[in-house]
Length: 118
Image (cartoon, rainbow, N blue to C red):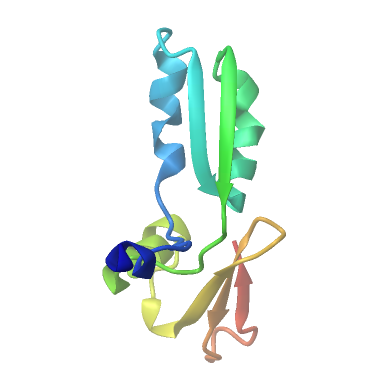
């Protein structure tokens, strides 16, 4: 019991919750859906919910997380998800209330502004 209590609480992490939506849309046998995700994923889901042809939808929103499970996953997200090829200039990123990812960049000759919004 003590071990279970030690592991209790919210342990937010990002998950590819939206990746399944094309399959849901193309599979007419799926009529009900429970969507779980962080706030920005829920907002994205809500923007396409009406196009999925579902009869019933349940949404479970979780705390936002500005983390990745590994440094490789974070690098892949910045490179592939945000389209930033030169990771050496990225200081960090944050998921913001405006539903965009704000990337903090090192100041360079080519980049006088150290913030980038995606």
